[in-house]
Amino acid sequence: MRIALGMAALGRPAYINLGRDTALPADRTPEAMRAASFEVLDAAYAAGIRWVDAARSYGRAEEFVAAWLADRGHTGVTVSSKWGYEYTADWRPDAEVHEIKQHSLARFDQQWAETKSLLEVGLYQVHSLTGDSPLFNDKALLGRMAEIGVPLGFSTSGPAQADTIRRAFDLEVNGSRLFGSVQSTWNLLEQSAGPALAEAHAAGARVMLKEVMANGRLAMTPPGVVADVALRHGVGPDAVAIAAALAQPWADLVLSGAAGVAQLYANLMPVELDPTDEQLLTDLAEPPQDYWTRRSALAWT
Image 1 (cartoon, rainbow, N blue to C red):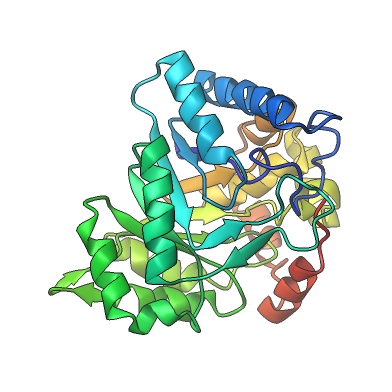
Image 2: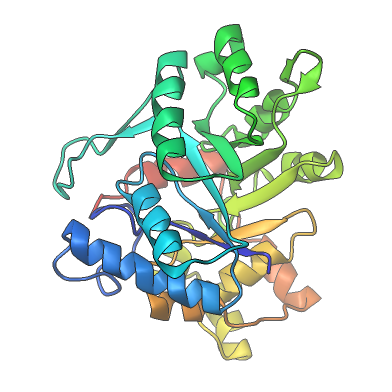
């Protein structure tokens, strides 16, 4: 199974994904969101998904996943998580600031201790690495990361993802490459990271694709071409968006950000895109700066 479940929409009451309102409990208490998370995790496991991705900033996502694993007794599930953002909303959907980013040794030490107290992770990632991150020149931080004995990766965001990917894979500690995995935004509207991700895959790195639904835009307000391809295949536009990501030969894992069981089932509908479909969909890419400007304007709801 090349699909993983991302917990960004399930671990906290507010996020920027479109289409969450009808999928989540009306009363988004921690208890209700925990129950909703369990339902989606159960459905994902039954469907054959064996990779779950969380982050320290996803509210209580790590806590929910740990409780689910303990309760269900499942084995063979890989959990990845991320450090670098701190969740600051205190479970308030209307918070002025939901998360604060900091790539420092102090933040790493704090969050790694918090993560490992809850979960045994198979991959620990820098959250939202960009070219201006102080991490690149912080030898103490890079050295500490290399010491934890867990495979390391990084996620990327922003219009310069390709440059960040190439630069990050050049990082070494004691003569060994620091990172073995990358998780980047790639979708039909934002395809700019593709060449760098293909290079990373060819060099032996694991490539994970996130935000393949463009934070819900491709599912809720799909371009006409996506809607037409979906109609022709008898599926929803979300399934087409995921199929397009899975069609990339360098993509090892594609994350579904489903906020409910119905969304997950819709995401997992099988689609075999033909060459004509693929060419039509490739042409949907927006200029990266335009895409990320629009994404930054999405409201937390």
